[in-house]
Image (spheres, rainbow, N blue to C red):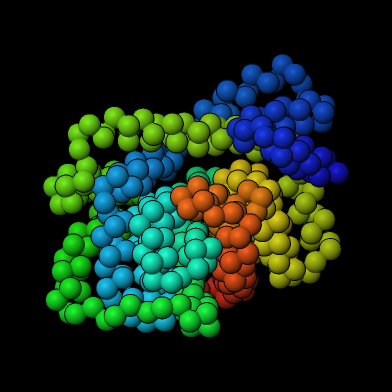
Length: 427
């Protein structure tokens, strides 16, 4: 009963427009006092908040945010889409496929859904519209491509999960690679089918000289995920060091390769990164005390006892977890959901002998669906702000992508090889 009270209070405050960090902090303190906790022990709040953000793993978050901001200004996304356009534009759904491929590469660089959607959307929408694509469909396609950001490594969501569960970041990144690429391929197939059915125009095949030129322009951008993932999986540097190296590399590209970055741009970029980092870390910090309250009230233990007596296997529990995450994603931001549910879902999965790395990928995909579902869907609003299209019109066109993500989440939940197969080869 207390668990439902907590979730109800959090959901109500979020719907009233209270910030995520304040919501979690207020709900934690109120629940602690309601459960009979000693008010004098509230001095633990700052201690728990500090302990939650002091892990070295979370240090990679500001660097990945910095890299995303540098890419937005540095012209990386333009070269990626241009390369995809000349290679795929002559096929059914070629431009939509090019946008998805660009989002996949951007996802392997920034780890952020909004950064992928915004970076590619500002360039691809006009190209797709000129070629006869429906504007809402174009927006939905890029919004869906952006949803790959939290799934394909490096992923900020997976870094948070690793910090909360003390799981290897490298294992989670490796486990997210195949499901992320599978989603990208399925998105491309869906967009091609829709384009063929609606008779969206195809561009003329680009000559090989133009394709080679586009590849040359995109080559250094394409090397970014190679540097990040290759360095991590090769044991050259950690996730935090990889993020720092990648940020310097993207800055080098902006200054010396694409020439779109100026010294005067850096203060605004750094300040935006500081603001974004502060918002994320404040939420994570309040989650530290929230986890303490959950343990104090024994809610995870009660949930495990209830599920263990109600279900004999993990299968219905996994389906319930996916359904709850998709539903919560309609009303709450993904980071908040992750911080609230991990302390309950992870012990529950362990009680059934389920691998928590595999669970992390299932949760990550399920949470990413939330950026495509109103009323909170972040990527829907990003694309609406860029193009002026109505959010509901974009959401309607995104239904096919949402169904694909639900199907893949279920497949990953019940086919361990999709996520753990590659992770077993990573040190």
